[in-house]
Structures are given as C-alpha cells and as structure tokens.
Image 1 (cartoon, rainbow, N blue to C red):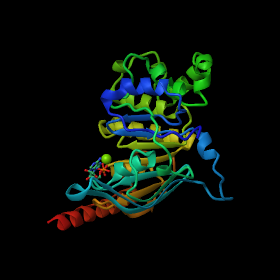
Image 2: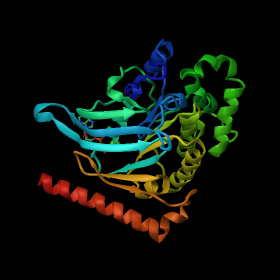
Image 3: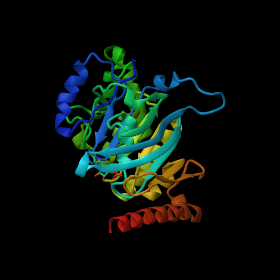
Image 4: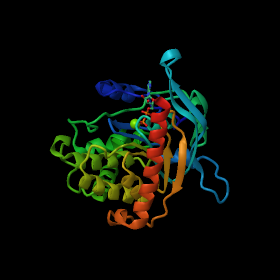
Length: 327
Ligand SMILES: Nc1ncnc2c1ncn2[C@@H]1O[C@H](COP(=O)(O)OP(=O)(O)O)[C@@H](O)[C@H]1O
Ligand SMILES: [Mg+2]
C-alpha cells in the first residue's frame, strides 16, 4: 500500500487543516490533489503503474470503468448522475470528456480519484479496484491554488515534500536537485526566473502554468483536469493548450480532461468521449488523429471544424433529448 493512498475531498477553508493533517499523518501519501474550483489533478508516482504487469505488445490500462452507475441521495431526492458507463483508457492516453452541463463528467473524475464510489459497477485505476481501497487523506487546494506565503518555487516543490519517494530526501535535496527540477519545469512553461516571486505577483494565466508545474513535479502517471482553463481569456487559454500539449508529449502521463470547449478537446486530446445528458453515459468515442504538435491555426482547418461540428451535434441531440424527457 505504499503508493495506495486515497484522496479526500476538501473544501477551500480546510486547506490549513488538510496541510497539517497531511504533514502529520504517518500514512504514506501517494497522490496530491491540486483542486482549484476548476481543476482537479490527481497524481500518482510512476512506480504505482509501472508495477502493474503489462500484456505483451499492449499498452497497460490506466483507467477502466465497467457499467458504472452513480446515484446521489436516496428516495425522492435520488439524483441518478451516471448510468452504466463503460470507459477504458490506456496508459499515456489523453482523453477529453465533453457533454452537457450536469451530465456526470466531474463525477467520472471523482470516481477515478476515489472521492465518489460507484452505486454499481467497477472502477479500476492502475490495475486495482478503486472502491476496494480505504480512503485516506490527500491534499487539496482550491482556487487560487498556490499558498500565498510561499514563493512559486516553493509552491511547486510542495508535492516533493509530501509524496514518497521524494519526501524522504526533501531536506537533503530541496536546495539542489529539487530546486533545479522546479526551475526546469518553470522554464518549460515560459516562467523562467519567476520562481522567487510570490503568487500574488503573477497573473491568472501565469498561476495556471505554475499549477501545471506543481502537478508534474513528482512525475505523476495520471492527471485529472476538470475544466482547468475555463476561467481564462481565450488567448491565455490557447497558450496553455500548447504548454499542456508539450508537457504531455514530454512526460506522457495519462490525462483525463473535462472541458466545455470543443476546440480545446480537439487540440489536446487523442480521444474525445461525448456524454449524454444526465444520467450520463458515453454516446460517442472518437479518436483524434491530427498530427502533433497541434497548433491553434489547425483548429480552423476544415477537418478540425468538421470534428467540432460532429461533436456539437451529439451534444445538441443529447440536450434536446434531455429536454424532451423532462417536458
Ligand atoms: N454530491 C452530490 N449530491 C447530489 N447530487 C450531485 C452531487 N454531485 C453531483 N450531483 C449531481 O449529479 C449530476 C452530475 O454532476 P457532475 O458530475 O458534477 O456534472 P458535470 O461535471 O458533467 O457538470 C448533476 O445533476 C449534479 O447536480
Ligand atoms: Mg463538472
């Protein structure tokens, strides 16, 4: 169970308490949650997935949902959020989940992280059933996710202070190797030289870049992103797509991205899953074959626009089916 910790959902006001609990906890903590209002990133050290036996010639399965249904509440108040959803994601894939509001996209991220348990069906992450593992405390940051009293560099190094195997060496390496690691990532996202600044000295877009650095510092195998760029202006968002694409191409984590933005999905993902209205299930699962690195200009080309229109039609149908069902 060294890497088998579970994350708990933590509201923003609990940050200090969570930090204290996490740092005092003797339980090993495998993942750290960076959860701003719009971003949830679950990170597992590489070792966990690397330890899973892989069938020869096939990529290991990172995430598998089999016939998963989730109903929140009971009796008159029961809300069926997901209905018999089946989804398989290979190690290193970049999958985008799109669909009408309230269809259960965030619920899928929460199932994968173990924050929500399936009412029926099975969720397997890194070869193990999520619901079968005990819930332990992870760490969560709500928006703004950087700790204001720490420099950007120290904020980025935070996961190394908490997640094994880095944790044991933190005192020894934080001034040398870990600092270099943080600064190398800062350079990759165009924030070279900003490590000594404080979060309040950075713009929203810069903070999101730093957030990506922190999400990747301990070489996670998995990122769960819940509308991470939703609050940013279009140009900043497009810049961050390119940065996230480069980071993914470099580090190859498995990414599950929830987004409302079909261009964002087409730019970033290698597969796009469209969900039906609540209770959600996967209506369409399309491979996105555009060559990488993709550019913003490509998102205006006919093939890309055609993909967008196809996805939009699915979502519109799902919405109108839901409205008719409700009416
Ligand atoms: N903890 C909860 N209790 C009750 N209902 C919930 C809870 N979490 C989500 N829901 C409901 O489940 C449905 C799916 O939610 P969610 O996964 O957040 O949707 P999405 O992310 O696709 O917008 C919504 O109708 C939402 O109101
Ligand atoms: Mg959501």
